[in-house]
Image (cartoon, rainbow, N blue to C red; front, side):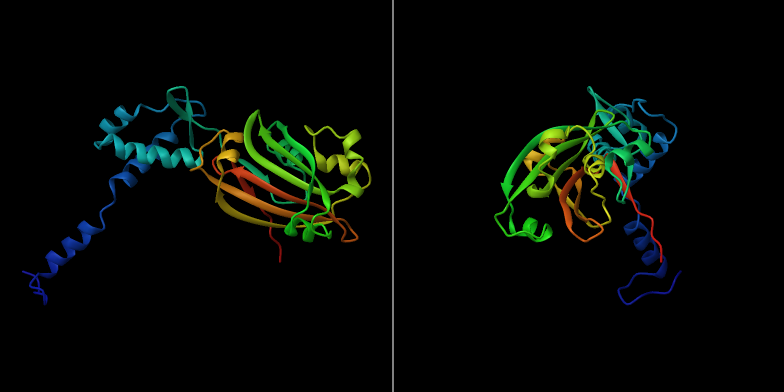
Length: 252
């Protein structure tokens, strides 16, 4: 018999209690089982029903639903009709001065954009500061839905000084790359400062991206300047966390 502790339990009993408390939760065990199943399937293959998965794992259907919800949020699987199928891998977008179009094409995706709004609006204090303007100065605002293979993955709002980019009104097709359009007119992006954070979408944003407000989003704020340090744009980009990931190359 093991040594008795101050609370009257033996060391064996305490060890058993610790083991019991550290047992793997059922939801984690189901998640591991589903990940193993996904490794055997290909893109577009259907998953078994929640009922079949519950029987297979020996758990309640709600436990299966929890694991399925996690995989949906991560973009590993997606809804199709009344069932669930394996998703294609997330699109990986490089964090660089390249345009969204160039990044998408690099990874074999077909880029696209849907125009939501193109108007002149007064600059709020943050926008004015980023563009070196007085607050309230009218700036060009371009809001577009970003597509990859026809699927909505992001919502981009771009703010630019009107006096410098008024030519866009006459020549630019908002379904195409803004980066390429400005570069064609001799405006070159020399550097940019970018900040990334996680947020939840507003009801309007979720509707435009065809998702729920519970889906985690990646929010990017960018300020771009030319070789003279003159501001080009301020961009707010909201991306579906289940459809895209970002990659940066770091050098010392």
